[in-house]
Length: 176
Image (cartoon, rainbow, N blue to C red; front, side, top):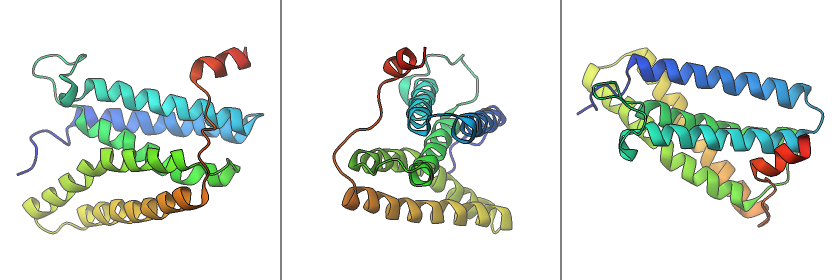
């Protein structure tokens, strides 16, 4: 059975807002920024922080910021993990960040954290019957996971055990 109110309008608005903010920050810092490595580290920390915030808002963490009766933000948590996973698969290769086995481990965690989206889409597909839009979403998510497995293997096989991302407080101190 489909989780009640998993795909609710409140969570969908949050997903669109997060995707827009991620895209705006990526364009601002990666395309127009001076230091690609420093900007990559900053964006990585921002995405970890956003995922952590939505983890606190999810039902699994007892919803510290939720009011009784408000729709769940679990879909947004899983979607932020999915968007972060897509970003981490593509951006390090595009801007030339050194491959790290730790990124492979982070990708594994993000993949597991975003799997409920695929399961819920499959349940919707089974419950509502064949709809081309659901099938396209299911196909996109499945292909993304397969590409993620390839990226994980690439990071774990070709990467080294170095963590090239500094904590956010260090990045702020360097920037100012």
